[in-house]
Length: 154
Image 1 (spheres, rainbow, N blue to C red):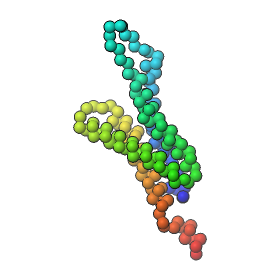
Image 2 (cartoon, helix red, strand yellow):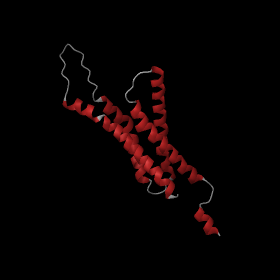
Image 3 (spheres, rainbow, N blue to C red):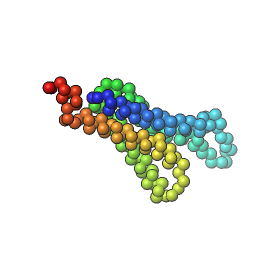
Image 4 (tube, rainbow, N blue to C red):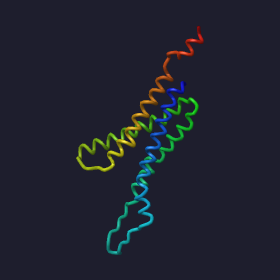
């Protein structure tokens, strides 16, 4: 596999993982507030504190894909075609989830504050990664000989 195709795909996978980690990082302040400033409720009030939920949800939904993408980046130092499965699956799921959120946002016309974050930190890196990984796979499976192989046969 020529490194000129694999290197951009590896970088896109790394950027996608880092973007997911940034999304997780954006939820840390509310989690720290939840940990260090517990709310106090009296016995006759209903007390529901969900300040730590965004952090826990982001870890649950983005933590494993980010780690898998980092693992893929690290293992893709050598050309291994089977590793393309991980970013492809993560990209397709990320694109589908953000698309569903965008459709629901357009349908309800509600002011959802995390739509720009989803577009910039999840959808855009997933589209770039998907495009580059597919380009690597198409090139990997192409039957056209490489220029070096043509020169060596003559």
